Every structure is written in C-alpha cells, then in structure tokens.
Image (cartoon, rainbow, N blue to C red; front, side, top):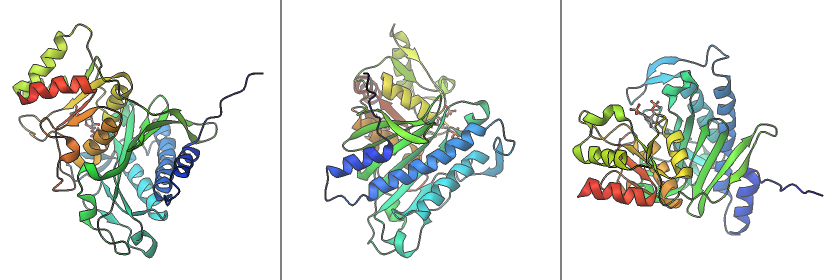
Length: 332
Ligand code: AHG
C-alpha cells in the first residue's frame, strides 16, 4: 500500500525546531506564526484583486518614500500591524508605509524582546496587472531594556543583528520563505487546509547561475562599472535576463535557480530605490544563509550601519560565483 508522506505545517515545523533547543522560549516561533496568519489574510485580499472594486488602485496618498500608496499596501500594513499588536511577541514595528515606528506601548508588548521591520506589500505597482507581489520582513532582538517601550534604537540595527527574516510571495502559489541562522525553509500555502506547508526544505542558492535581473531601462543612468557587468552578462552565451520589477519574485526565482539581482544607484538616485531596512537587509540575510552573497557594490549589505528608518541602498545579491565576478568588476 502506498503511504503518503505527511507534510509539516509552519507551526509543526517551528515546534520541531524548538524541541531541539529546550532553553528556547518559543517567542520567535510565535512571531512567525503571527506573521503567517497576517500573510494568509493578505493573500485572501490579493486573490480578490480584480473582483472587488475597492481593492485595486491608489489609496490617494503618497508614502514617506514619495510613492503612490495602493489600497492593498494599506490593507497589508494594517493586517500585519494589528496581528502583531494583538499578539504577545512583538514590542513594535517599523514599516515602509509609516513615517515613524509604531510602538505597542502596553505591559505585555513592552516585555517582548523582538521588533519587526517590514515592507507589507512590495512590488505594489504590479497589483493592478496581476503580477507577483510580496511581503518582506525581518526580526531583530531589541537593544533597549525589556519592560520599557521600544525606541528607534531598536530598529536602527545593522543587518548582522537580524535574528530571522523572510518574505511571502503571492504568485502562482503563495509561499512563505523564512530563514534563521540555521537555514532557509519555504512553505507553500495549501488552500484546502489554509496552512503553510513545508515544501522547500533547507533552501540553498546554487553557487553559480545564468540569470541576471536588472532594470535595463536605467542602463544609461548606471555607472560605467555596472554597465560593464551588464555587458559581460550579455556576452555569456548561456545567460538570460529576467526582471519582473517585483523584487520578491525576482529574488525568489534567482534563489531557486541561481542568478544575480541588481538594483544599482543611478545618476539621479545614487542610493537607488530599495530601502536598506525593509528590503535589502532581509533579502541579504536570506541570501547569505542560503549560501549566496549580498553587497551595496562595495560593502556587505548586512554591515551597512543604518542612519535612518527609510534610508535607501544600492543592492546586488545572488549566487556566490556570479557575485564574485560582479563585485570584482565593481571594485577594480
Ligand atoms: P513598488 O513597491 O513601488 O512597486 O517597488 C517595487 C520595488 C522592487 O520590488 C522592485 O525590484 C523595484 O522596486 C522595481 O523598480 P524599477 O521599476 O525601478 O525597476
């Protein structure tokens, strides 16, 4: 008789991991569970886009980055904040959608040792055209004393201090990928039971690849070294260019298949577009744990000292061997 391998849900997996560390408090697992719950709620709304009038389109405001805010951006932001606020594992949140940190200043939250940094809905300019989008998060241990409200200091930590990070991709299926220093694992949402189930165990970015992902429209605004690298890619017979314009989708593909993702600075925007704390750091953390590399062209992303919540950074990340060639060309 054929026996079916039983899949592990996200909760079962985090509990199994916990069992290996009897001293662990379970707070990080609880936080991941909360984020998974918010992701499922966001997923339901994302799937309704196109059917329900009040989901698509602009919310009519501009965020702190100067970008049009979409209705789904706000929905995702509210869902994540409300789940984390109602939970007992998070002291506060920094979100790309909010100018300032959100401090959950109550007795229970003040005792929580973690803060969450997030881009609730990345790639949101793709919502209206039914292309993959994602939520990105990282979790840091706070540096201020437990029992007090968290402060900005807790959020302005370099990426090397990240405890866990991940993303949710709302694509042809919905996946939650998260990593701790022990490894990166991917969970696919099984809509029949409404649970994220372990589908990609111990994800490793192939050490080499053939995909390069960059916005070619900016080619003439890139510095000559970046252009040289793009030309180098064009000269490789087996290389192919893929760019969705939704970093979660681009990086997810490259993480699985092998490749590099580039969002360099331009003449007009030397620091590029992506935010260090909400986009670059979590993705760099995951990529490094999965065996890849991530830099801002010169420095390891995870070592860049944050000076402001919404600071931007150029980003280059992906397969180790391709990244070595790229950084060699950028720094020669
Ligand atoms: P947004 O959330 O405003 O759609 O931005 C998406 C981000 C990132 O996900 C993507 O890689 C990048 O911006 C694309 O920017 P370009 O259109 O400039 O290439």
